[in-house]
Image 1 (cartoon, rainbow, N blue to C red):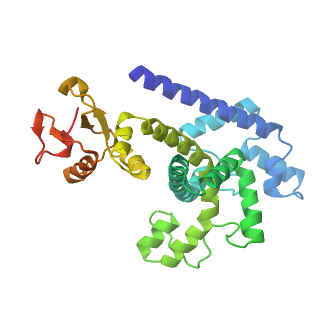
Image 2 (image 1 turned 120 degrees about the horizontal axis):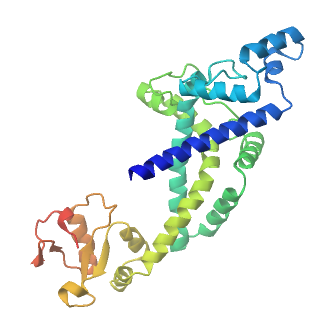
Image 3 (image 1 turned 30 degrees about the vertical axis):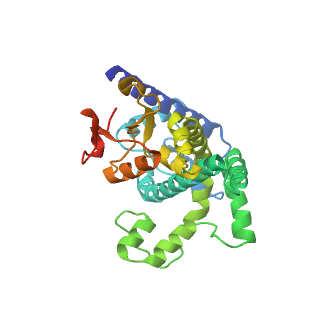
Amino acid sequence: MRNFILSRVGAMIVILIALIAVMFVLQHISPMDPVKAQLGANASAEAVAARRHTLGLDQPLVNQFWNYLTGAVHGNLGTSFRTRHPVSSDLGDFFPATLELAMYGLGLALILAGLLAFGTTLKWPGAGVLRAVLFTGAAAPMFLLGILGLIVFYQKLGWVPANGRISVPNPPTGPTGMLTVDGLLAGRLDVVTDALHHLILPAVVIALGPAVAIGRVLRSSLLTDADSDYARTARAKGLSEGRIMVGLDVFAVEPLAADSGFRGLPNVTLTPHLAGPTTERLAQLCDELGITLVAADSPNAFLDDTPAAQLIR
């Protein structure tokens, strides 16, 4: 395990250095001069040369690369050519907004993935349209989706804002930097709703790709479990297909053939993601399936008040 972790960390460092080197080369061959972009097109040649010397851009590319690496090790990521602020300071300012967008994008991706998986598996009305929209959105580049979303939902319909994080005056500035969280902590529901209004379009754009990937995996798992023995037993007991799909994520039932000698007599097997269900809930579901719960330490005894965590195979 130690060697595996060290090899992964080493590979990560090598990849980061390679990416930085590629960015340095691309910036060097780019026709845009960052110094002239800072000082303006009318800056004198002397001012440009002095600024270039201050930034170290008059040194060979290898020296520039080495100076950046040594500075990054000590926490100095350089100065942004656009904002003229330290990069570390800009990262600290922009990180809360990035984290907030990522959180809402992930949450929306999980919701869409669940709708895609259960809708297509259970053949809900409109599931085909949802699948077509999600697959089309996931196949398109993210920047193209963003531009299309701005054209349709901002320019044409006027439903969402084009940029920014908030339009409410005097929003709270702390403690997390995430406007929806800070708005709730400050009791400013106007800030929360306006921040969500600004988040909805970018969150949908970044959620489409992960939603399709997660939904396909979940749907494959549901289809596999739908053909299992305990799912067929549930259908034979009269449970609806939707109840069976939900039950597949609660607990699994397998034939107790080897231990009891009776094929088809089911026993309860808790899945790894079962988060402490109550004995009453298990008893209710098993009663609908005609299953007898037995304690782990006594396979032939009926379960009375045995905790659910002890129901193991």
